[in-house]
Length: 606
Image 1 (spheres, rainbow, N blue to C red):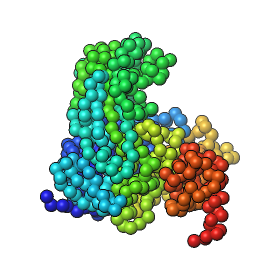
Image 2 (spheres, rainbow, N blue to C red; image 1 turned 180 degrees about the vertical axis):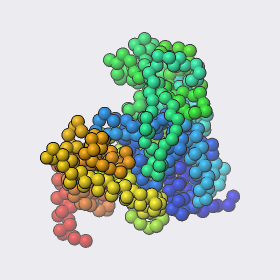
Image 3 (cartoon, rainbow, N blue to C red; image 1 turned 45 degrees about the vertical axis):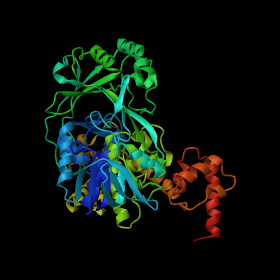
Image 4 (tube, one colour; image 1 turned 90 degrees about the vertical axis):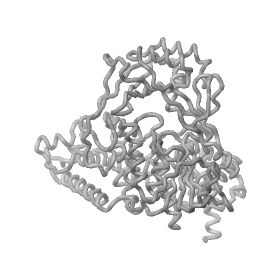
């Protein structure tokens, strides 16, 4: 067979693979996107939703960098909500229900319309490596494809094993083949792998659900789009509904725990802490007498209902009995059973911040292969891997987002510095500077980078700058106007006063949009807190500037603990700040390392 040459090869066309391939292709590079099923591009394997707590912030950051996920969600969403409105703006998070099939079809059309992407249906089994550099991929059929860089975005497919009760069978997702061969190839290359587990709930037929009496969950009256490039959302929103488990159901599940692969010993992989199965909830939260179950439509043209909160791998007869005991679901018919899946993934401490592996040059990993969970975390990594391959092809320094400028920066730094012993999920609590990393200002933080890579158009970038200036001028006007002897900005800081109250009482006039009014209000009300965070960022950046040479031999630093030597040698932190975030590195270790670096810098300034 003829060998074909590309600038980059991406293995896997899920959320990570699509963002990586689009970024590279739009930057002008020839990309091979390899998938085992052309009809499964960006398939939503589990929840038919995008965004949520912290995840919504990530999607807006992806959009600001020029990614596609926000646009796809706006084009195919069926319900939009802003979560945490009752709390401070640091934790406001957009979330949308998406039409599952239309989302995948949208992404498929975008990929197929991109002239620089060659979408190939093939099963990758081996990474071609020469002199510790990845140079291509060999398929199951023996075809070789060569490239300057390879990005693996294999999701849950590496040696995937599906469990339903006492039964288990190979699969990457239900009805899809697993990826066999790549795990062995990675191990031969010196990449360590671990076994993780995730799961999904049953899908039910909407026409067989008793909707009366269930609590309706509607979308926002004036829904906000995900993408800064979407002018306005004009959609007919669909509702979700809430029901609950109860004590009888919990007792029934307990009596059948021995038949669960999770508790019967069939599953050896580590599951996600923050999205547990119903059997896990019953055991770990034994004091709870009920758990929420959200019934979420999977699209406009289907009767399929996603039973959020009932992820399970219990046997079929137990699943059917449990569902039949839930209020509203007494006569519900199953479209698909819930199941658990085990798969191989690579501990991410084996990566640089660029997502390139430390052991094999030009080999990048992104998405669930890096021990993460969630579409949003995967898409963010895919985009960052793609951007770093662009930098590498241009012979430029890696593109690394700081913890103080993006949730994506927090995500990647957590993974490569701290690692994880369970599927990683992003939360607002993981970000030290979350008041600066709000969902409303991702464009101001990151769009300059999207423009630099050529993924954000000049018109979009100019609109962002104009919006930023309009808000700045408005805040300045508030500082110059007075009411009751006090500047309006100080008056606005009172908890009971909001921006609209100023407008309604003719204290202030403005041509800002509703979104811009929110930005102005946040800038005024939280000015003191924001300035305080900027001071914290300045202190943090001071430590980040203290670089550690990559060739440093930690074994030569006397008095450094054995654990510190092992972990520092494994992680190879780029700065003192990164070293300080490695679990197990004590303040004493940090002091010794800092003194050692200072002493050597004086002795050898070069």
